[in-house]
Length: 123
Image (cartoon, rainbow, N blue to C red):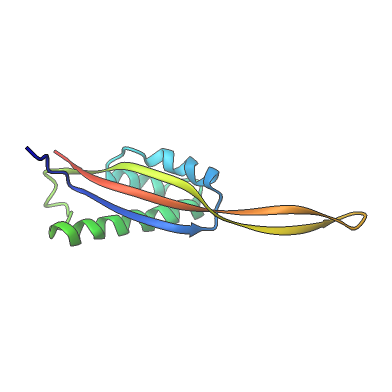
């Protein structure tokens, strides 16, 4: 007997923010219902990061509607769409040199993030 799962994913690669900062916001919306997560992101203090996550969640909803041919409007809410899993991994790191006294240079690491989100239906 095969269990049917309704899971959709979306990813965002190369976000120019460090993974540690992205995880702070990702932990706020982990395992939340999608509409509640969007509300949390709207009023979050980390505006730039929450904007990336909002775009990603809207893309996730669009992927859901394309895959299952049903819109998630106010009229059609007999089920809950929630964020099943959210992963923030480190992407490419840009390495730069900052000049310091006596002809030396200190390395600056500009980190980027890769984000992967899974959406699932809950009865």
